[in-house]
Image (cartoon, rainbow, N blue to C red; front, side):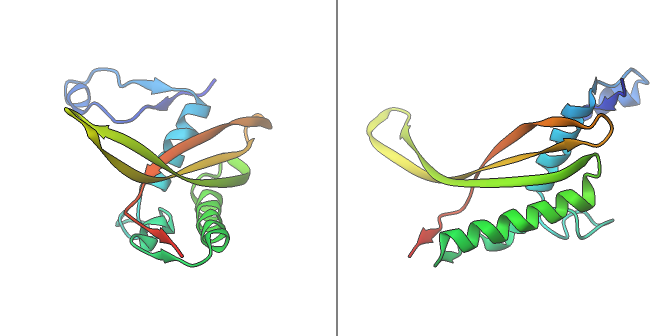
Length: 146
């Protein structure tokens, strides 16, 4: 079984020439998916195509939820095809929701946060086995649906 570095990397161990934490293939793929989802295009200076377009749509008034979800899912899928070649035939599902959180010490005041749940599945290229669906919840800026 292959071994991959787990992130975040512990640089103090690296400097002290100690072993770095490792993980298996599936965890490594999930870590890369997380990085793709949380990166904006152009953020990684060595490859400006690394990331996804969700961050380009911050503060957007969404006219068609279905169209918005399709655009974001397609962007993520294309990034996965390009930057996570260990995952074959990636599929992306997006669910939009909101979470209400009571402010600590202020029982009558709550905040509503918009969130999206992104679920990625596919087939692991090396083993031809299904990749356990990976879901990541992202809290995004206040956006509205017309």
